[in-house]
Image (cartoon, rainbow, N blue to C red; front, side, top):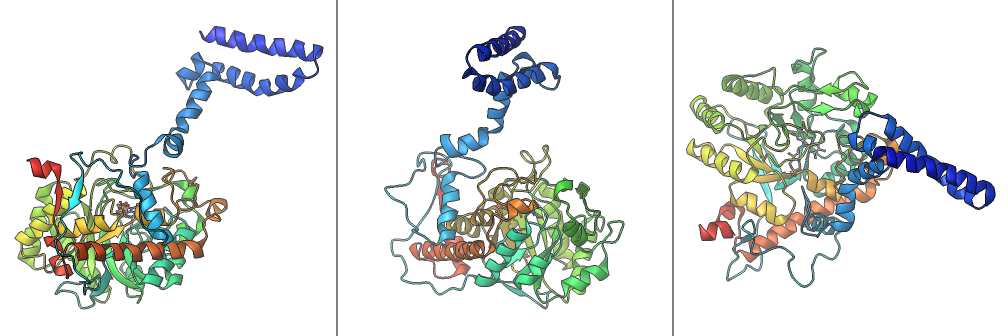
Length: 487
Ligand SMILES: Cc1cc2nc3c(=O)[nH]c(=O)nc-3n(C[C@H](O)[C@H](O)[C@H](O)COP(=O)(O)O)c2cc1C
């Protein structure tokens, strides 16, 4: 077959060439045809792709269309309720809240009400006129002297390096405007975080970016210098992340600019791999001692840990030890395996880590069993996009939530799945200045602020409809599924 195809291309070449001499207007077709012949011969001579070798040129078209599959599906072929990680319905929800525009939908829900995964919230026969609750939560155990009054929904961890300077600025300015916090992610604190003046949750990852010595070990002095800054309200030790639990993070060389390298204290333009483990602790005792140390160094600010649940036994024994030693973090961030990432390892992203719903229930129950729930606040993260998602998580015992990709949608993310290539078309997850220039910081600041404010407004409406006047009763809100009803 491949010889026939190539023979046909060569025949066409000579045919067009001869015809061009006989009829001048064929010259155009001949010139247009030359790249096709070039591609066919190139395909025939390469060894990388079987399909291109056997079907010269057609194989190239096939591979080109395959690369565009995601865009074609998303733009032309997909139904609104389809699409992963997020459906168009979900993305449009964020857009509406971020634009502060027409916040209604016509005709009826497009969801499948007979699906076993469909869930609904049980409202009251007597909705409330108003509710009297500020959606803020105090984070800080009895071991902490500088608690933080946090909003119920903050920006989840995304480091400068995985997201652009313009994205960081817009998120931080939006947070300042509506008085909520931004988690810095593990890439350190950049000038874009500081300039905004917003509340920061400083995340420390396994590479200790921003507080490490030349060998990559944790540096107390560098940590303290930033931790005591007034803008830093809490510190979060990232133990593991849903998309890559137990795996390290990757910063591609193309994203490792001079500016990012300086903040992270690494060599620029090199691919940087953070380890999957912490060098400061490898046992429960050492972890609890490290939490204590950070609390001391940071003027007694709330210290938390972020993890994706793996072996349940590990978490259970950690809680037992916390109870025994009376040493604990002030908050625990629990992320589901469905969590996102700028770049996750192929072998970790799909099948590692408990999903959020199940792990949240387990973590809350285990903390309660060990009488730790009043001391430790639980923050849940993983596909929290809407007010109903927040209410659902709070009903399962979370005290507050993070949203990372939801906030990205409010910045204009189109889910092009290019975060790991430096080619994000919306200027959010790229260091390419030409692409970043498409993201208008002033416009997106307003959108981030609108989105967060409207999420809280929606949450208040859900509580009103459900007859719940106070966040203390958040767990009285019941969610149901057909699976539950029929089991
Ligand atoms: C671009 C990007 C960068 C991220 N960077 C970090 C990070 O530095 N540290 C971290 O703990 N999680 C990071 N995450 C995970 C998010 O903080 C969050 O936990 C996860 O995406 C689940 O929340 P979501 O569904 O609201 O996005 C990142 C996620 C994305 C999409």
